Amino acid sequence: MSGDQDRFNGDARILHQKAVRTPLPDLEAERVFHENMMTVAEGRERKAELLADPDVPLLQAYEMEFERVAESFKRRLRRIAGENYEDVAMAYFRGKRDDRIGELSSYYFEALWRIQQRTTVTDMIFFPLILRYPDSFTMNVRFATGYTTPESVRYESPEHLVEEFADEHKQTYYEESSYSQQEAAAYLKETAQIIREEFPDPDTTPFDERKYGGIVSAGGRRGTTFSSLLERVEPDRERFDTPVTEPTLVDAGEEARRTERELLCGGEVVL
Image (cartoon, rainbow, N blue to C red; front, side):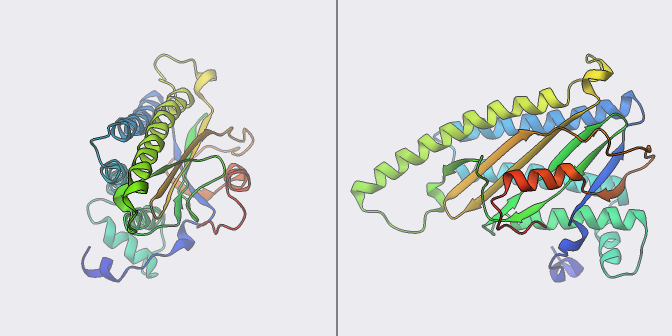
């Protein structure tokens, strides 16, 4: 990053207890949403393949995931504010504009900035929540201190090891790390199916069977240990009583607070 971005150090207030609600006014909008969620599922399956391959360093799988998520935020920023989304977001952060486009841009720009920190910062959980309602969907981008949840699968990365093991322990560590990655790969592949089930194809699924759905995921790292989680979330069917005509920021919702209570250990700070 250069210019203004070099001096940007994050502002978690824009993310805290907020989500973006996006309308689904017609079948075409539903198709786009479905395609985006299938891309998420496919990315998870691709990461599983890389983790299962003993010849592929875990770092490669981790970086692939980072690049995919970062690019998805960049696409949203371009759709909202155009190629100059950085200027729009920074103007909002500095109080030079106070409009819906500026607010949305700053939300996703903050998310992008924090995603980019994940390559070097440990003890930070990426904790997004995506919920489908009859006429819209919400994306709640969250980060929390810590690196795992009680329900997460954990796996080891020898590439991130800084200490030296004696020869008799080194082989054991590498074998155990490989096994943990195989277990994680199986988990990632299995939970990718949850995404497909929660957000089915609108062209082949009756409306009553697709109008509600939800997932929460959590990924983090501490030193050599990585963690991953993905679970179903039941949307609050009474959450919205009015339609929305354009993307807008809304309160994070009871589902967000519920998943924080259930999945975080209690000492984390949610951004």
